[in-house]
Image (cartoon, rainbow, N blue to C red):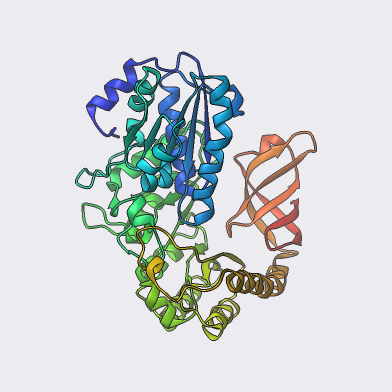
Length: 453
């Protein structure tokens, strides 16, 4: 495995910036951000920083932020304002902002929040130790948000305490340019990691006790290895060439989901979980075209039919946007009927919010906020009615559950089934990391209760 450069590697090994001082990282957003925070912690621990649970105990605070929707951007500014009081009490406190908001806002953050010491983009995480060193040396208002467009995507998976299940990045960035999405501007153009690097990372994680990996990217199923291998080939390689017990992945794009990928999942169901998260965003073809999604309602439903035929025990979830510019009441109803027709057990739905740089933000036919709110509530109500009925079928079934956590005080443990259901049941902490049979006694849309068989 490789670091981004020999210079970075040398810097990481030969510095003691932290001197035991505390670091607090505030994280919100997608799994990619959570994984990025793990990387930041690992890099900073190599510089002798100590992670702390409370920002009041920190000498370094980093906000790792999300900008996919408008609310998280506002949250960054609000959070920085909260930390200002801490900086007034402790002038030596250093504050940095990273993630997608750091990439998007850059100079605006420094201009509007002068207590920020440095801002860095999503492509500059490996340079974090250098930025922090300069901040503690007295350099302020640093901005490091360049994209390394021509550099290959060579990183190593850095996870401090991977536990039973963890993430492994396989791609970064996105080339789809959906008209609502800021990701190509905050994460850059799409790049894939070398296949052998991914396999090496997973083998190392297995040696550290990891039982399950989730392959991670903005659009995992557009993965392309330098040998010409695609995502289905990668999945097969992970299943056959490593000792990992379980494989998941997120997030997929419908336009890239093909029969080969479905066949690969079916052929390796001993390792590849039957759960697929496949965002459709809108159930109306005209709106999908305005979104630049590159498929129609009919095409999406054909993909679902193909998946269900190939993987009979398939479990589906999805992402949905309501109130996209120009969406009519009838077009919104197409979204509701698609949810009902497919039978998603889980949905993640959001009101459309205009994002900087995106085409949809310039559309003149924006939907009123109160209409978006009302439609979102109606969608959730419609799904709630069907979700309880959909999960009733699990009651009485015995599921294979990988135990991930234990509540020693109450004697309860929890883990995830192959279908990605969170299952709670009575058991001892020595079961963590083991896959056990659990009979489901009560099924709710979000969580299950069960009994150890």
